[in-house]
Length: 64
Length: 407
Image (tube, rainbow over all chains, first blue to last red; front, side):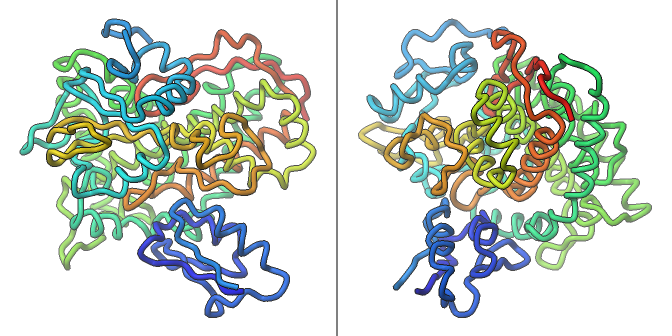
């Protein structure tokens, strides 16, 4: 599974970083980006789905 | 709150966001309009539009071509094309449009990143404990007046590096700007233009120029835009914005959450027993009781859902109504403190996403955690005595509670 933050859509709500800091980080301006090229380690799939489902801007996509 | 306006005759064609019925309980009004209109119009305030569906609210929030943020508070004072936006004054970046908006915003963002905000958590927690200590021994008191209102006020005063004892002064400024929008235009304009707020800010700026501090005021004074220091008007406007936007809003969210818990024993007991539920509970309170409705001015004539929006019309942007849209949120009218999918728009959508959202979330979470630890069981003394603010920031201004269990 991979996650990706669309930087054009991300407005820095920081929900993904709060819910899944293993998968996302934020820069000094609060813009989110995926860690580890977006690769979701085994066992963290639910966290990835939950982060995506809580993004107000629909900025996170998941590919499996 | 007394209103100067005649009663609303029809919500779809004559709505007024300061009407007592809207102030007391806007949700049934929004639900009705969302399923019938879905974009309502009123001649009040010189012409105002109101989208209700999540889809339409977000479409407006994303459309900076047809809508301008030059003024974001609907009132009888209508800014002309060359006027400073009333009533907040020049308050970048909330009253800015692209392309200037991004520059003004980028300047502020680092001060409000999650990592920077975390540093204020210990101060916030100590403050909450101190406020709760002050209520010790009382079985009945007002949770809005004794607790909720002080928290964001004193945190922002601390961030700006202003004296804590000036907190009371700010309460008056805020009421004038945000809550008295239905007062006659001339009176309000006179208060806003007499310069009291500006004089206060100028004095604090002068102190910080003379003796720089490790705070937000000095940060703004040293910040550069295109290699130049900010114009004094820009610094002052931004400070006024942070004060106004950072206080009433979070006070409302803390108050509404306590108001909900006071009336819902099952949620109260669950949260007291399981503080780990706080993360979803905080998001659900923000969704269900989102305090802030923004506004835009129509920038150019435009057809929207078959309605002809005219340049200069107001448009209310009710994020709280979008958060209750059943097309996006299952059981939208129910408060589910363990809701795990919650894309709520309490902090807005698009380029004007509330810059203080990390701060507000931290304050709300800490305020509720400390309250629940101290007072796990409490109730309203009289639901009829709860009063709500009028205007675009909605929250309880009086929450009389009876403490049933104190730790």
